[in-house]
Figure 1 (cartoon, helix red, strand yellow):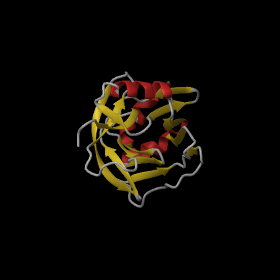
Figure 2 (spheres, helix red, strand yellow):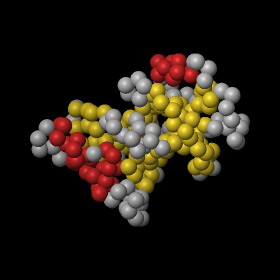
Figure 3 (tube, one colour):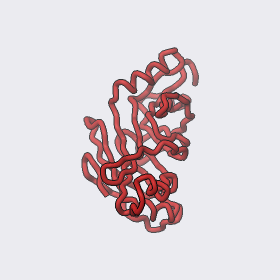
Figure 4 (cartoon, helix red, strand yellow):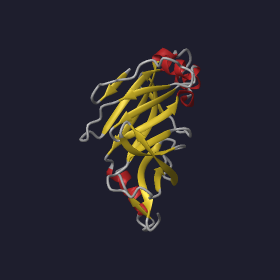
Length: 204
């Protein structure tokens, strides 16, 4: 498995695979705009059999995805006959600072209904074999958690604006969680796409 930038991986095989979470920790310094983690297809298949999930944790937020959601077995047929799982790679990519995407989200909030609390965070899952790549789009069970800004009222309702790959924006309710001493806003059903924290103006 590979992780970049930072190249640090603090996960490993959990003591029990049943409904386990395979933690993948990536050092993403504040000045970095992207990070990616790659896991071999046969390892993804093993995690799928064990009903495990994969969690990527960076300073920009964390994303948890069930290994079974990736559908690695079905993906082999899209790269030609005779492709083995060991020849495939699943990459999880987190990126930030995309001005054009931020403009889209800002436009959605521009009506005055929402106040944005963070910059956009893009999460994508890409399956590759050699020089062929395929971006997965149907990932409804992703759980994400984004850091809360300092000074936010403790009783303020928080939302996550999601910009999907087709350009549609939807709203997810979020709840506060404490992750290793960091207060974060967590939401389920995120899917892949671009995410930003937001609050409704005038709402508590």
